[in-house]
Amino acid sequence: MKKMILIAALLAQTNLINAGELISRRFEGSIRSNGIGDFSLMRRSTGDKLITATELEAFRKDNNGNLVFAVDVNESSKGSENRDSQGIAVQSAWIDVRINNVLYQFANFTTQTRSSLAAVGSTNRQMYYTLLGEAGSSRITSNNKSDIYGSSFDGTLTIPVNMDISKATSIWIHFRLLQTNTKLGDPESFYDFSGGFEDVAIVTKSDAAYLNILQAGRDRAPLVVANDAGSAVGSYAFYPSSSDYYLAAYEDQFPKPATTILTI
Image 1 (tube, rainbow, N blue to C red):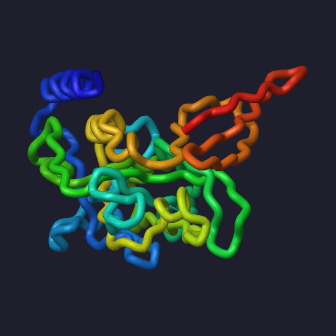
Image 2 (cartoon, rainbow, N blue to C red):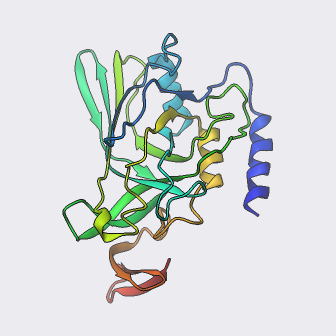
Image 3 (cartoon, helix red, strand yellow):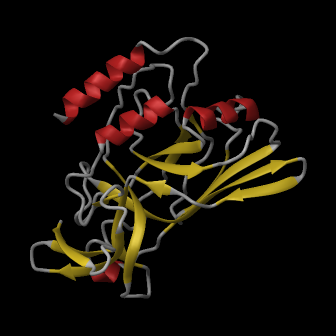
């Protein structure tokens, strides 16, 4: 069913493409093995070709007031991580926009999935946004000129930007990955970032939809909570067992809270 939906979406998108439309672009550099990545949105991976502020504003409008980024999850195949399913957790991500020598910062972000994780040095688990993927893939998008086409990009990260950025002189995105407490085993060991370098691209609405429908690596990842799994959830509690992961989700259903046990 997922493949049928994906094919239908690609066919619909193909009819909309013309020479003047946006094309997803990969940035110069990568998120490094220390979990830190800083990218100028105006520098493409080719180095000699720039992305203009006007084009970045077109990306923002195309994504309904958001800038959307694809990440190529590139982790080592060890433990529960393998070629079919790899993951990282995002501690923070933000965009800096400079216009007329004034700096504007946008620090709210979302991804398609979350997980309950403990940071290094702690056993206290809390929810973090995650990015999932797989190795050795070759994406077939609706536009073969896109930097996503033929690539191994995986999950998406979205940051709302509620202003016109067409006059910006500098735009940067910053990533800080979560250093998990791998001594606890999974899910922390799965979502660590010890593997390697993650490439990042800015994507069109159609390419973002393609990757979101694909859900690369999600089926075999531990403790995955889809980002649309109930906006009324107020808190989560993590309960490990010998064979499964359990989350108790406490929903705000006045006058009495409701508890739902999710087996993952």
